[in-house]
Amino acid sequence: MLIVHDNTESGNAYKVRLILSLLDMDFKTIQYDVVKGETRTEDYLSNINKNGRIPVLQFEDGRCLAESNAILFYMAQDTKYFPTDKWEQAKVMEWLFFEQYSHEPFVAVAKFILTMLPEDTPRRDEIPTLHEKGYTALQIMEDHLSENDYLVGDSITIADIALYAYTHKAYMGDFDMSRFPAINQWCGRIETEPNYIKMF
Ligand SMILES: N[C@@H](CCC(=O)N[C@@H](CS)C(=O)NCC(=O)O)C(=O)O
Image 1 (cartoon, rainbow, N blue to C red):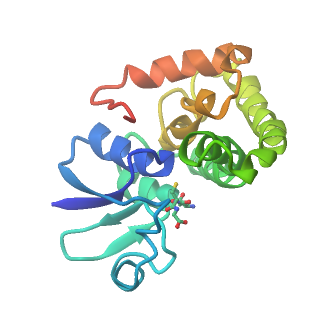
Image 2 (cartoon, rainbow, N blue to C red):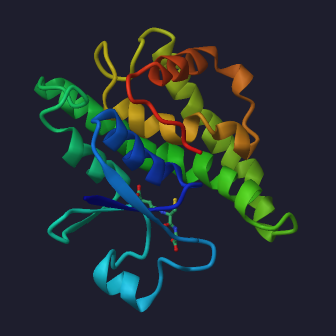
């Protein structure tokens, strides 16, 4: 059976659980406390991911694939979640890179600091900058989704799955999501997909 090296608080890991569920695949999870450094042990670094992070998808033959968006791409090929048209494939990649460089480092990290670290952490000083950059990313999504039901084409792809993961929990990083009606409607569309599972 497939194994997800996982943490239930992680949107990156949730992307993996969500695509596996949407594809109706069986999997089990192994949980790691990332704050306690459980992904940084010698055993984990040697056998699961030398980059010391979850998520990792481990196949029955033992091979391990890290990086949430690489896992989405691997699992979605030849399914309805990855388009066949080359331009649309490239547009999916555009959103996946956007997610990793312009969205996740701000939207996800604000949630991490406010929900996973102690209330007196000095990292709370980062929140204003994270909000400024996170709001910029969310506004880009809002502008696109005001005119389109999905990020690419006219049905759900891994671009939507990747961006949905941290966007639908952005309020936990104190982002005011009432500013983004098109994003909220798009989240609702994703949540009607057969075999959809919640993050928590
Ligand atoms: N680019 C990676 C990011 C993975 C990542 O940052 N994982 C975090 C949890 S969301 C982690 O494992 N942190 C533990 C650590 O860095 O020690 C992906 O998309 O999978």
